[in-house]
Length: 172
Ligand SMILES: Cc1cc2nc3c(=O)[nH]c(=O)nc-3n(C[C@H](O)[C@H](O)[C@H](O)COP(=O)(O)O)c2cc1C
Image (cartoon, rainbow, N blue to C red):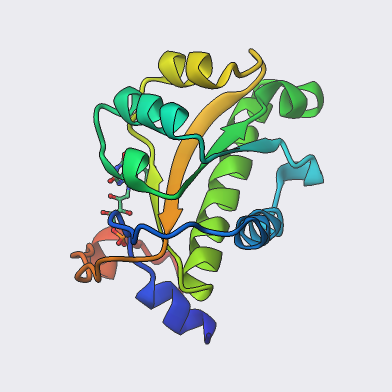
């Protein structure tokens, strides 16, 4: 797939067919995510892959009842590791680890689209509940729960702010 076509064609997909996503596909998504840039190449991010239905139901509850978390064949919880990044970068490391995780999440979403999968970045959830459900170590901050599966909807292109609203040119 041409990269610009992929960028423009990717949508947040929240409805999935009732078909599993094989481990090979999941592994390919994770390998793609790990191609993303990373501050100092510290790769201060980790992933938890969840397909156990009872955990997915609990994560959906932690995400304020968002049903795509319970109905997706797979969830990938992307976590930042600010301690790892902070060891080299101090306070700035907090931000870097979140950016590392965000870069990986975006890359994972694009890879899913390229592979014909549908996926959605879910960021609205109760951190403490997610930590408890997944028994996360204290050093990890969950930043996104990506729901993914074979798409069962074709969402419309959402509205975007015009470039003139979001860009200032300081050029001659
Ligand atoms: C930081 C972040 C948090 C998001 N959280 C949620 C969420 O909790 N639930 C959801 O359905 N979509 C969530 N989204 C997806 C956005 O709603 C979606 O990207 C936006 O509406 C634009 O649509 P598009 O991805 O199809 O271009 C989130 C996206 C980002 C970047």
